[in-house]
Length: 88
Image 1 (tube, helix red, strand yellow):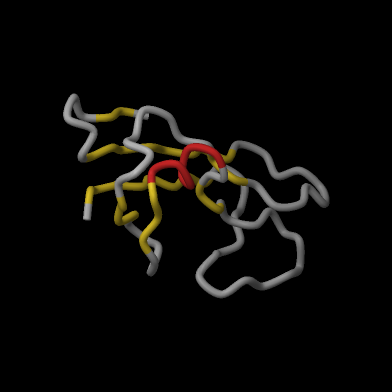
Image 2 (tube, one colour):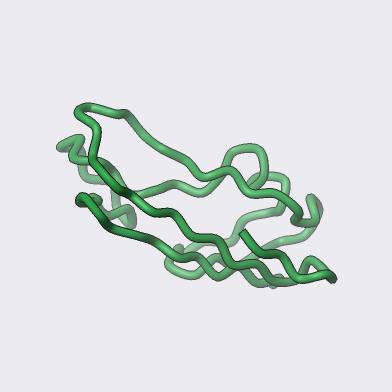
């Protein structure tokens, strides 16, 4: 994860190597954001506050759970996701 010095932008990547059987739901916890600032995350339709992104995290793609969640895709082996985060 890379965060700009003014904490207005960040880029974070998640890389899936091998899928795990029945892993449950995964979230990616972020660091270095302003807790009271609202951020727009690429690929997500809603905005999130910095403290939410740092303590609850970003929802990641499902690993073949068989459950469909609107807006969250199922991942496959050797896949990746890159999120661009900008202050609203």
